[in-house]
Length: 490
Image 1 (cartoon, rainbow, N blue to C red):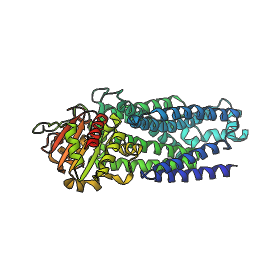
Image 2 (image 1 turned 180 degrees about the vertical axis):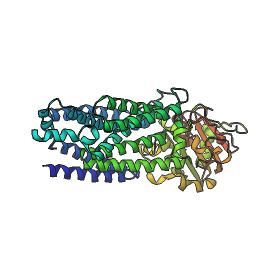
Image 3 (image 1 turned 90 degrees about the vertical axis):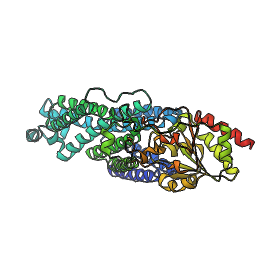
Image 4 (image 1 turned 60 degrees about the vertical axis):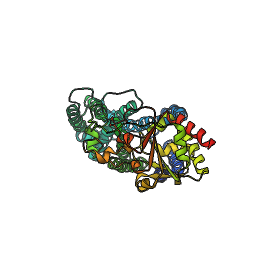
């Protein structure tokens, strides 16, 4: 039976890989999710037949956990609006890290209980040893590391540390994205405090290897959770896509380590793949912002204390929906650059309706997507896919930037920092050097925005003051609706 279980785990791991590969493209993302889901079901079912499950209480706990967590996930997944999708991703990713940390905690405390067995008979029963072997066994297994084995103990403790950090850090990311937390430091000299907590956490991680009691392990987990909170607190809101990706990588790494501790190939392979993919995505996201990861983690970009750069010249020039619709209706090519404001207004369906009207007038329409537009990797792609926008109309930054200088009208809806020319022209700006969508090169730019406020990073957008830019002040969905009504009358 054990062979069958391990084979099921291996097949599940293969399905996880196929699912992750499918999710690398919007065209195959739905299929990838289905494959990964089938793999998860297979791994879960195989667990019921694992030889270590000897008692009815184990089955009862597994069924109860699946029922409760599955029910909550189904309920929350069905009701969450697309605007809150980044929060949900951060929260669920944190749950994965927390689960890995919990596995490590169970194994560490189990080892402590074996070391502290009250009698030779109990120790013998726990390790299937004869009484004559007990003294020899106990002499060589006096602490957690020696009992679990060096490799298992190191990876188990490392996975517990990384998982706990990912768990508490993801909860902070969720709170920031959901508007429940606005602080960028809890204590004076927060970064120095973070360094001290990190050193203390690593120290207690090492002590956990050599301990034969529970107190050190408890302190280790508390410190790891605190460090996760302190690590995420100083990070500015504009960096949240990178942070979510980073915590995703940490969760995958933790799961892979704990899979090795449990001897579970599905966890090892899935965790390793997710960790590697998350790491690559984190690097790509940081590159898209032209900032090293250390700068993301320690600079506080997007916080209230960020340097706002130089003030732009000129003034914002407003435009009415009628004039904007006429400009778009008689254009040869229109490019739409969406951002988080489109998500907040839930305007993606109205935007697609607007695009269909333009296409009926033989206007070429494309969507320009910046890698860090929104609050999570691929946020805009998810919104547009939900609205039914064909994938061949969606272009990445590298594909679309060369076309802006021959584009008649660019419509920026809810985007800010990713279209800010200050990233190219203002060396004093915090976003200087970040690759942007070159919308300012278009003949005309229409920015749909609710007000004159700054973006999530707190940096003034020079585009809004450009000679070829007009501001359509309105909620994204209402503005798109007004444009639709005017186009229908043309």
